[in-house]
Length: 284
Image (cartoon, rainbow, N blue to C red; front, side, top):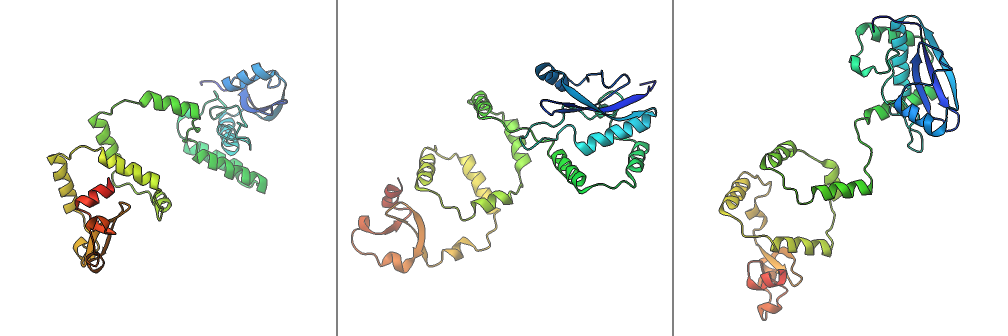
């Protein structure tokens, strides 16, 4: 913008809906309706019943920019919402007092930052305003998050992805991105959680439907297990114990004394060896 003309910064409030719009104009701010698309569409639906409040008239370009940016930041005009999660301001981008969009100019210059700081120095901020600033900053921190998807949107996405196979390159990229990631919040939720009989049955069915393991997969499992380090070696942990399956098909470890103390036909034993034919029948 080569020439800067005296500019009004104003706030328009819709008298019916309460929606606000922060803008600038070099003309009459009471006659000027505003230029934001969201705001104009709102006026088309609800009518031009608005009241106008003048923030200031500026003849200095830098002062106008500093005031507009400061007002936009403090009031969080892009992301602020009310208790019903509805937008408070109709602005979709930050107002910079020049052309309505500060984002295209990149970060503030050192000079602009100093002017904003000087304009705020010595001002007493009320507790109410401080709380508004805190809420605005919280919303700004969450501005990267998308709005939650509706159930209908989720169904459409699921339908579009059903049957689609990912390429090996895509799978590799995802694996590399997630490798080493820790989720303590998830671990805390799952700690001590007991699986329901229905879940156990589904897990068993999933394992039974798996095909034979290839030699390549077996070799990968062997290599992975060889690199694992146990605090308590498995041999020490199972010393004096036997891995068994009970009548309900559940696997556990018991002492050798308990196992060999059983008498009668093996089919009637409370516990049988997990490698036996009877164990496979109980688990199947």
